[in-house]
Image (cartoon, rainbow, N blue to C red; front, side, top):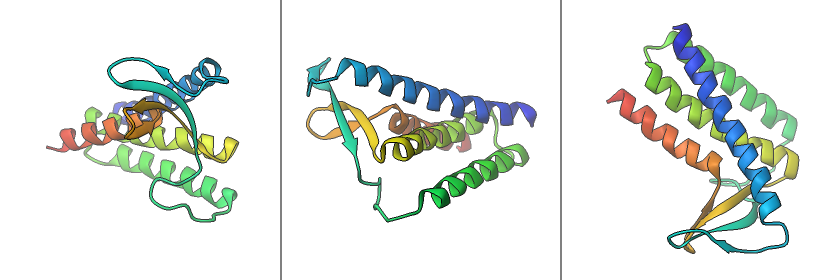
Length: 143
């Protein structure tokens, strides 16, 4: 059970660190530039997303931080006591770490930084990618 909890925490920590480091690098590379083509119709574009993923509600930041902290603690308890294997714990850790990375942006900047643009359809960041990948890994581990 300890290995599962460590896998959850490690995946979450890696997701947050990669997300925040990539945003710092993107901020330096894109300073004063709007768009830079990378490969296959993708580009780097600095976007501050002031909207929430589903809906932006006026919420006091202290309540949001405490709710996020309690949710992470609750997930750690669930991971520790559940029958999730290492794969499920890694998936859940990636989802939690991605959400935490975007929460850091929202608390520090008041918006989430997105910088990976795929065509004109979608602009996202590594936290978003970690959440999607984590959900896929989690569902795959449950099958």
